[in-house]
Image (cartoon, rainbow, N blue to C red; front, top):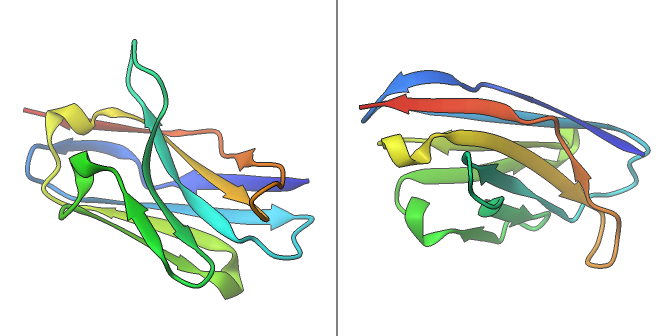
Length: 117
């Protein structure tokens, strides 16, 4: 079983920046997929960005050009640099890790990001 611990959330003014971190531990052989989802009150959880072990990335249209996902395979960690934050980015952000396409997906506990206008 994989455990994920997130950090880096908080309160920031619009236009500001935050960096989220997520570290995986436990029964890890290899993790192919890592990424971030977010969920705002009353909304469904949505993909923000993900990254394969080889570095290929995917971003939601709403964050393209503002957010950057990266990972450190040696540390089994994934990061999300969030710049030019907007109030609509306010949500709980969850990281995930999945060993392969048909593997079990593990989730972090979530970290709150609040952007004030």
